[in-house]
Image (cartoon, rainbow, N blue to C red; front, side):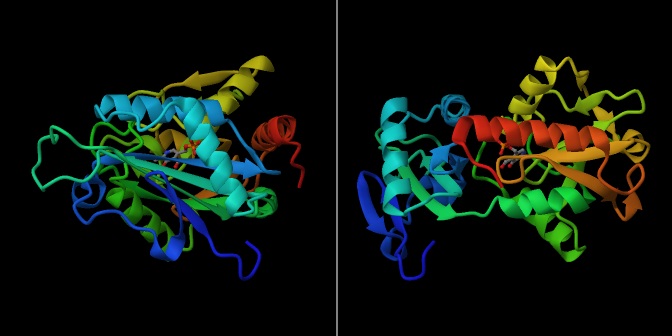
Length: 293
Ligand SMILES: Cc1ncc(COP(=O)(O)O)c(C=O)c1O
């Protein structure tokens, strides 16, 4: 953001300065975390993978029986307006929908209008290109989340705690590990390993993880290039012996993991498979948006 330009938020049909934007204190998002969200990358003024994000939002809403506040086309128009008003060239668009405001009572209210908020902020994706050459480290945390992680719910407290633990440890991300050793995903990223035979492995897109949009894009690109992708569970024991590991997400398209809990992965530096996959993603990003580092 250029200095002095006030940020503008979309709140239930109005564009308002971020500082004075607000929703009811009886909003069910505030009281029960009864809502869902999306984070989309904007590069060169263009929304990356907008359709998959919209589809995932529709699915999250439908799983929670929250009425979509507008049509997919209208979502697109509002998103463009938010990006324009905030002069976003490279940045992140945040979309949140909650069940709406109602007198506090756990069951769904009979008549409520969903709350829709959209905000945008600048984000420099070049930092990710730099991190790609050094790699990042992760710590592991116990999997303490609910059993519907496929819904992109705003109930992110376990993720907040895990990411704080990572930050304290000087790591970029925390991987959730179940009691039996299974690695589900990171606090805000999907987790991957590369095995000795060159297979690229990530947790299946079931109820235990959020099916990342970047995860989906990477699987599609890898298949197009006849690379071997296995969507299956892997354990920490397997991750420790992996030749490479990496993470994917909207805000960190593909970053090599060079250490887990202070122990090197493979040779302790970004490996060739991850580097190739990251290059593939940047090419796809360039194809969709024209963005280049
Ligand atoms: C728990 C979790 N897993 C994975 C992801 C990656 O998803 P995406 O690639 O759509 O950003 C996110 C993104 O926020 C997340 O919160």
